[in-house]
Image 1 (cartoon, rainbow, N blue to C red):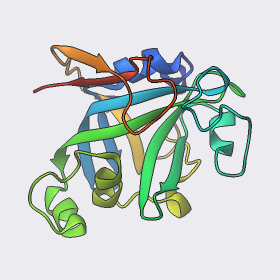
Image 2 (cartoon, rainbow, N blue to C red):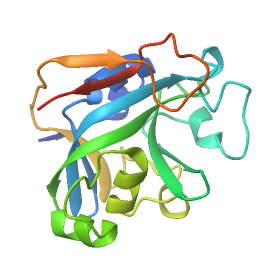
Image 3 (cartoon, one colour):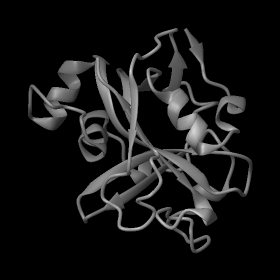
Length: 180
């Protein structure tokens, strides 16, 4: 098991997104294997929150890589991103889905369900109790409660498609996922 370093995240968001597939996200007593992500490339990507420049909401995207960028959407859901690339190049990877590995009973309690616990960005934030107040701009390269590690698992048959829920930048096939 090797915790991912800042060097891993100091790369192009598209490459980091692909390489995050199969890695394990740990938040407290819960963990899950990342199986779906989307890349967002700042000022060159009209679908990115950072496309029009820095705001209070997207400020973490303009900081160091390896930090959480958590935002609130639709007035009800948090979404988890990992900041990538070099300082001041505002890019991130949205974690869309994980396969639960540990703390499943905790996740079920938080979600009030037994199945489909983490197969969507809002669902996984509820299951992992991720929110903007506690987690936004958290440095996962230094934090010991929230981090991502590589256990050597390599997904087979990685697929790509347009990102979900956007209206601009649909030509970019920057959603990556794999089937078990």
